[in-house]
Length: 121
Image 1 (cartoon, rainbow, N blue to C red):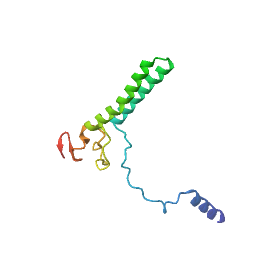
Image 2: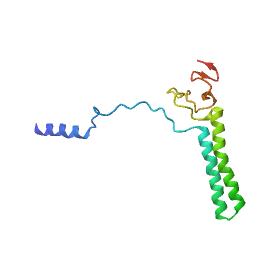
Image 3: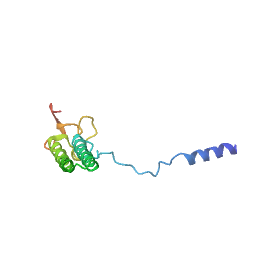
């Protein structure tokens, strides 16, 4: 009988105690996972690659091209975000699939969350 008591005590030590864990709010941030962010960062990375290759092969005019491409990346990202392909604001996000503002033009800042390309729901 003493073995059974010891087994129960050992099991309770290995099981997590969930009584004192705080309740976390639902995850509402998407951390910039959007088409605008990916395209902007991709263009900056391409410009960095061109600049690095220009330094390695000592082609200085290509270094200038790399810097120009790196400067164009954030501009393209901002333009795409204004077109509706950005992550949006936390007020616009919801938990329903397809309602997320970073999935295309339906999440434009001028439109409400209940309006889609097919009209209000």
